[in-house]
Each structure stands twice: as structure tokens, then as C-alpha cells.
Image (cartoon, rainbow, N blue to C red):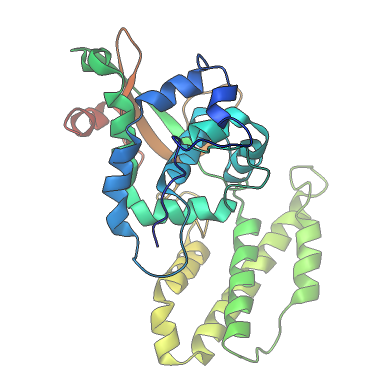
Amino acid sequence: MKQDSPSTHQISFLAPNLIDQLNPKHPLLQLARHIPWSYFDTEFAPLYAHTGRPAKPIRLMVGVRILKHLENLSDDRVVQLWVQNPYYQAFCGEVEFQWTFPCDPSDLIYFRQRIGTAGIEKIFAASIVIHGDKATEKEVCIDTTVQEKAITFPTDAKLYRKIIVHCLKIAKVNGLQLRRTYAKEIKQRKLECHFAGHPNNRAKARKAVKHLKTIAGRLVRETERKLPADVVESLRERFIQFYRALQQKRGDKHKLYSLHEPHMYCMSKGKEHKKYEFGTKVSITATRDSKIIVGALAFASNEYDGHTLPAVLGN
């Protein structure tokens, strides 16, 4: 259920409003005056039900999300800093200083899922409009970069262990009795994969990775064979990922690097300190003189930079 934001015009008899105690020239307070908060309330209100437990105010969730990207913070960190920083709280519409977290970090995930891609585009469009004529220059600069994903460096051994963990979890949830769980062997093979680049460990690590692949394949086939047909059908996409990871070769294109981020891919941007990066290619468009970002577009495949221009200019 939608919840209204605190009224900033209400007079407190105990202490003045929070915003009256802060520096009015602070950049965050100046930015808050130009952001159309009522627009977000109008646009996102239909996404909330009229019954049930009240949700967090829309201004609070939009404000925390803007702060997260302004400071390049994680969900957990932005929530922690919100409690410590009175300017963060005033930016999000709080009338009095708060001592507790504004929300759980997972609430930011649910809010992103609630508003979807269209909602994110509305927030981004509003950030462009507040710049006025500066955002309407005739010439723009376009460049591509890598939006890295929050994953560990992908290796075959890690991928096979993830498959094993997922299979054991599926079996436990559905009450399956597997022939073996390979718990002791998996732990031993994991230790053998450490320091695989050392000349004395290469052969042992290579055998350990091969053994992990064999164990993963056995568990995938046994789990799929023993599950009921309707459960297998509901987990079809997951099993396709398992077989794709087990069958891919070193030189294959469109490889699977992560089970929870299957759409990411490997890119080499020619950086001296980081030869390969794992994520998605993103094109950033900024005005030539004022350097205001007016466009951002992600691509599902690793396209040549010149081939991204039609999609970027037409967006």
C-alpha cells in the first residue's frame, strides 16, 4: 500500500524542522528543490495497492536511489550513510532527524523491480529536465564503457561448484535422496584448485577441475531424472544453464560465466591494468560543452563501438 511522505510544512513545537537547521546552499538541498517529487508520486502511485501493509514513501525510495548513484554506493552502504548524514535525510523529505535505517537494503531491490525499466527511465529523464537548456545542445559526445557485474572472477571450478550447490539445493527442497552428495570430494578438489597458476600445482588443479565437472554432470543428470515431470518443466531454464556450462569449450563464443548473471559477457578494452572485464557494454551520451549525461544504453551483446551508434542516436 502506498504511503505518503512526511509533510515538510508541519511546524514542530519541540524543535525546528530538520531542513531549517541545515545549510540551504548545500548541493543536495539545492538539487532537492529542483527535482519534481510530485511527478514521481503521480507516476508510481498506480504500482501500489490500496490495501495491505504501508510501503515506504515514494520520495524516500527515489531519493535513496538517486543518492546511491550520485555517490556510487552499494545498497547496504547508502542505507548506513543515510542514518549518519542529515543532508541525505533532508534530501529524501524527512522532517526530523531519524535514528533508524530508512529501509532494509533489500527494499531497494524490490522497488527497482516494482518500477521496472520504464520507472528508471522516468527518473533519468527527470534528472535531465532539471538542467534546462544546457541539456539541449546540438552536439553530443558518445563513448562506450563496461558496466561490470558484482560477481567474483569467473573460473570453471567456481562455475562447476555453483552447479553442484544448486543441484543439492533442488534435491533438498524436493525431498530427493541422491546416491552421493560428494561433500568430502568437493572440499578436497576446491583446495587443490588454489594457486593453480603455480607450476607445481597446474597438473593437480587441472585434474581437480575435470573431477568437479564430472561430479556436476552426475548430479545434474541424477537430479533431472528423479524429479517429477512438472518440477523439471518449471526448472527447465535452470537445467539449460547447467548443460550449457558443462558443454562449453574454452574457445567457444557466448560462454556462460555466471549462473545468476547469464547475460553478461567478457570484454577486452585494451586496459593495461585490467585485460578482461566481465559485464555488459554501455554507451554513455553527454552534451559537448556542459557535459550533462543525456543518454545511457546497455547492449545484450559485445558489439563493435561503431555499430552501437544507430541505436544510441535513435533512442
